[in-house]
Image (cartoon, rainbow, N blue to C red; front, side, top):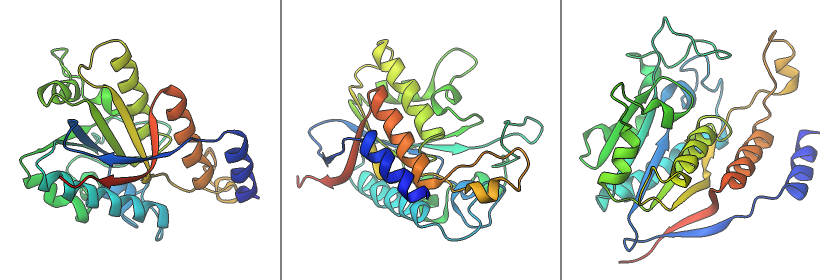
Length: 242
């Protein structure tokens, strides 16, 4: 039933996707959203997958692949890590990614990023990474990263397509449109490098207040909404030979 709904949705709410070529001709930054154990590693926490999940595994693999490319070329990377204080809840979600625990750490395939000089790591305590970058003095770590590196394009990968990725993308586009993010021009989401979680209706019914969250359906909706806000959604990413 869900697969039929997804196909119907794709037919009536299509997301136009084009290939994208990475080139050193345009300053491009890679943004990784919450590729941490608490969302990606089986059994790692309340919001981690309970068993192997192909969509999430592919997202992790693609994140690691492009992180390697950007580090080899010394192109800038900005990685968000969901990280929460235990005494400050984030409703409607159960406790997750508590600061200082393994849940809040990058997945094993990306932990090497901590030692790379072209990488900016930012712990965030809210869904929207752009908001999570606001400092008490009014500055914004992500805005500074864009300006300091003169980034014109960001390539976004991560989890969850319809939650943290979407919120970050929407806020970034609004800031760009207001002129707060020069010289940023394009926000690009790589669909194969994003993922979301799966909570079927049949399971949600037995979890009290839980809201059903069919993975394929919500992944498409996340991409569709981002596209509607002005992001470019791409089906594949290749690297131009330099």
